Image 1 (spheres, rainbow, N blue to C red):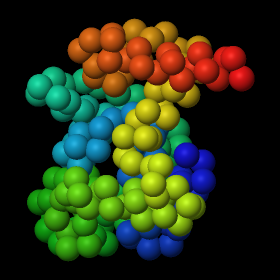
Image 2 (cartoon, rainbow, N blue to C red):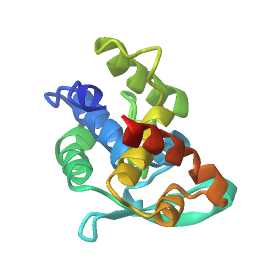
Image 3 (cartoon, helix red, strand yellow):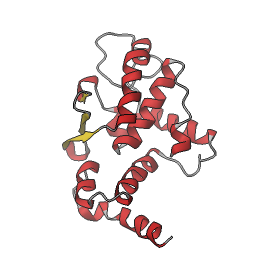
Length: 171
């Protein structure tokens, strides 16, 4: 994850966007479909959180970590204005044509940087979500809270992360 997150160079609008997207996926644990659906008004940078529409049209509020918030702020200040073609565009993450980035486009961004670090076969956007949850669990966060953050209806869906944590504990 660390190798992947250090890949995008923030020298241009696309690099700023890519870094913000990767940091958002890992730093919030949201699904790629949730990320591409975000609008600028879904962010509350002062509170450090975002409003996410999850599966089954269930809305939840997730915290945005410091690193992800910094990457998003840099993108909003210096990247997004260069990508936006229409001032009325509400989408947070834009493609090179100034439209909302698609799920496939965002998937391509993850794969592009995964290829650079030799993780193409092992890395998907869901890998970042899985890493987020596993790292929270390994650092002592309660499984019920992780369930809430991920938007899982059932705790059994979240419990898959305990297997990884137990293996880590044995190691």
